[in-house]
Image (cartoon, rainbow, N blue to C red; front, side, top):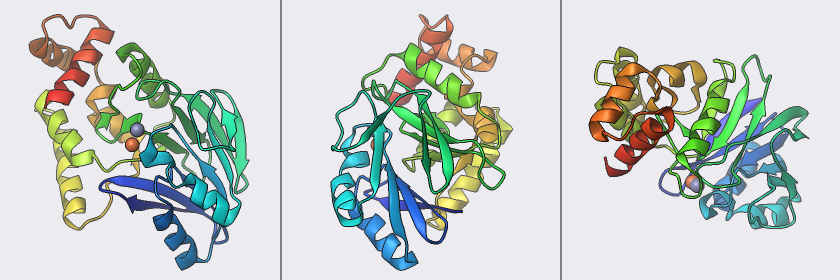
Length: 255
Ligand code: ZN
Ligand code: FE
């Protein structure tokens, strides 16, 4: 299986997974980069997976469905370009001969879902849309801090080798914030240098993996004493785990 992030718009990735013949894409906000890749690699599009309703994740769905006849899956509780098969937490789907489990991850949007493939070439695969980013998390447009914290807890509990396929190249700006929260985290400082080198060569920093994210992502580390102290210094009201998480998210919004 080949896993390729197709750049779209300013900083989106449309994830393309293929076996040399059949392909699936996740969150095609634009049809053109997908059409180009299908043509270049000689692939037929079998499936389109959508994580949430924002246009930068859905606007290419109709054109791709029309051009290829691909089946489309998306969240049960969000407005979607019909016809799609609607999914929610606990549902499964099969594409390219692989099984995907659906996980409910409300927070960025109210009905956001993620797709988890437990075994693929030895490492699981997670398509998490705008929920978990490398070094960060999505903005809370529709959900509460408690919902997003629970969603991130669910994702962080998946196996450490899980490859994290986020939909935006936000890594460097996330890590600048993470370093402000945790200036003494050496794993974080090292990862920041490595990502700077990648971006300097115009290479993606993704996929990440969960072992790494647990070491460097402040939104997966918000219960650690150093982060609680930092959040409390930003907002003296931040005392319990949800208000600490909310303070970190608010601090990032202003950063
Ligand atoms: Zn979004
Ligand atoms: Fe997005």
